[in-house]
Image (tube, rainbow, N blue to C red; front, side):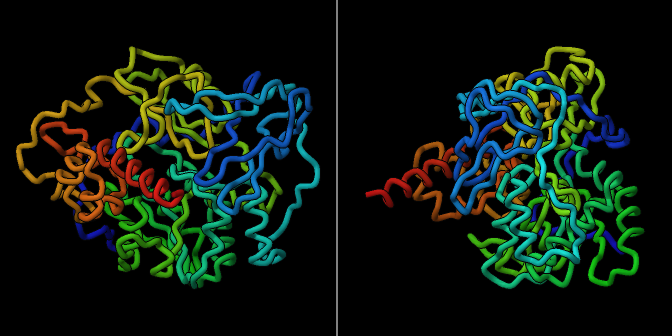
Length: 441
């Protein structure tokens, strides 16, 4: 099948995945202490259901919320709760966390049921996913049980195997090493939402993953693999949907408006683990890469592990990084402290040298329109950034501020190195804050 892509904007940016794309996933031992944030998802934060001095088991629920848009939090080690306190996350936010001293027994919580897919109903799948605390693990962190309970009919579930951000190879390795579980997770999502078609979209720079998926889906007529051109941001939901089945998600709408749901590779595997082994989400794979890292790796790590432990496991630094990024370099935030913990939606930690980055300089706009040419949403990032930087967010909204997917291409391509995407993000936050204030009046 010929590789496909989205029709508008985008760019062929360097993928820089060679340091880790052939390296199998390795396991990092659990640390002496884990710091587990009570908000690792979009929606309401969890409240602790444990106290200092309590003993907990691996996989035990330690935080939950009654809100629909939320996801429970589980212990990633067994041991003693030694703190329920504010700690700093990688982006500098302070969040209440449960701190657990590891007893290194990995005593697993009782009661986890092992099921086959034919033994569970759609409703039961949603309940299992919710109880397991599964969220979108590609970056967004949206609670998965909400996504797979759509208010409208869905006919297609798409697994996002594009992994278009530079450096990151988590999904690539998972598709090669844990393909069966991913396909199980895809079928589970399809059953939960009543979809009759499952699509796995994979960029062609991952030929081993494409071959593995094609081999495994074999005679299942409901499933297909769609090769994708290597073009950023191919993994963005709206661009992926347009590429694989030609449907265009309207402005301000969600994928379910065109009968689709998109899931991350790692999320599908977490669903498989929850159903087949009764295991909640307490660990994930993280790519550690960049020129400054001695031995870049893909690491299976417990939630709550300090980032510095991952760096030590990779042999430390070869040189002082110009910047440390949490996630991909196009969309991830700068890391403020390596004492911060791994969270559910952290896909990478990148230690980048000066020649791997382009810092914002905010020189005057030269009206070249390159940002307009590459914008995959057909927006005018130059104007959105300018209006947002001036606080004129209502005017920015009139030219579709909220349709920006924050892919970062406008800043990347700008010859004046204007911080367009950062201004736009700030403008969206300001607009949301003003709307919330108006609703409260």
